[in-house]
Image (cartoon, rainbow, N blue to C red; front, side, top):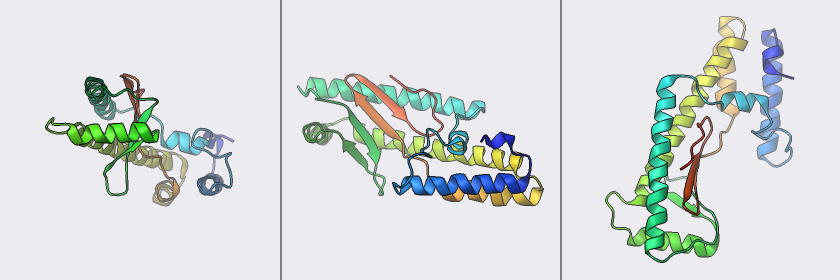
Amino acid sequence: MDISSLNSASATSQYVASLLSQQQQSTSGTDSASSPSTNPLLQQLAASPADLKTQLAQEQLAKQQAALGRQLAQGLSASGVTLAGDVSFSLDGNGNVTVNGSAADQSAVQSWFKKDTSNPSVESQIGAALKSAQTLSQTTQQDNAISMAARYAGPTTNVMSLYQQFMGKVQAPSPVMTLSGGTSTLSYPGSLNSQA
């Protein structure tokens, strides 16, 4: 069922509650059918925004991460480091950059980070880019949620209730920057196609 086919506030509310319930089950590993890639509600909440201001911010962020990816790849290469596979970067609960990949690749990248003398460091710049992506994701989800709530809630009094349902239960994945060879990508909900 497509959410746009619902024509009453109560039907929409029931459908939303059903999808959100499926999403909660999915995140706990009990139901794979409602993954973000197939759940129509999550697809709409994470869709790329139409407003020019956000698109320009995303394009700027794409350029920033592309430059960082090249700088990191060149730095590793100049140090004689050859990565065995893809390495990705994300933020932990404290906002620090975490490196993911094989144990050897993780060690090599973390060692290079410690030797990096650029100011600001590449690691801190990656962290800043991931935080910017996180902020853009949240803004996108909020904008999409209020737009969808206004469209589907029916009576005005239902708009905030439906908006809170969207924002209170849908968990968006965290931004991830991936270095694969000399190419980097930054992915996050609502992102434009971002590749160096």
